[in-house]
Length: 282
Image (cartoon, rainbow, N blue to C red; front, side):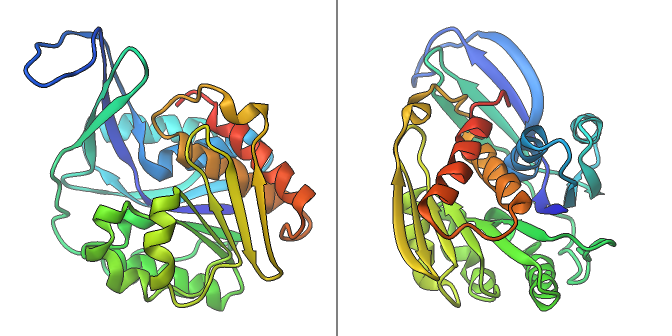
């Protein structure tokens, strides 16, 4: 089982007729309510890539009708697990320009109370892999996320992390520094460069991905580096959540492999699965 931990975001997506420039009046061509964040994109991509893989989520969501609707869609796609409904869930307004570029405005949200440290218990049966949303390693939920990660490491469960943006890193450092060693760190090059020096130990594998640019894989055990730049990397991926979907496809491939990939051709297959998942509709 692949378990993905974090919060479910509700996105209100406004597709604009012209690029949203300062001082312009906008009229949305379409308006859509959808899921967002790593819990949504990563879980759905892993399940779409590998329907026979058990995929579950753990964490929290809003307690309003939109969050109920989005969580229902996730469950309808055979993603298991529970997300605790809490007041003032995470929502965002997404402005999408005709060329696909997007502007994301997150609405301020504060959990009514800090999540109890034991709020995120490992499910039974235990997963084989736990993936953490780096944005949720903060004041309100960081203690519970770190406890989940430590419990997983003690049980021999493999861990991965998608890091927060460099701008959001400083306030999350106390919890990121408390994580046990990771098997996989997957994110944009700038995110990884900012976070790597802060971790307790080098991850077994670091995967740098950034849209159509080559994917770079660096291994610490055994020490090696690979770069992948095939035709699939130049596809026009749906911009919103593509990186999270890429990670979902990779995790599905790794979870189904007989052993953790260690050589170039094994990672080529994993990266291909990630690129295929990134191209899925949100």
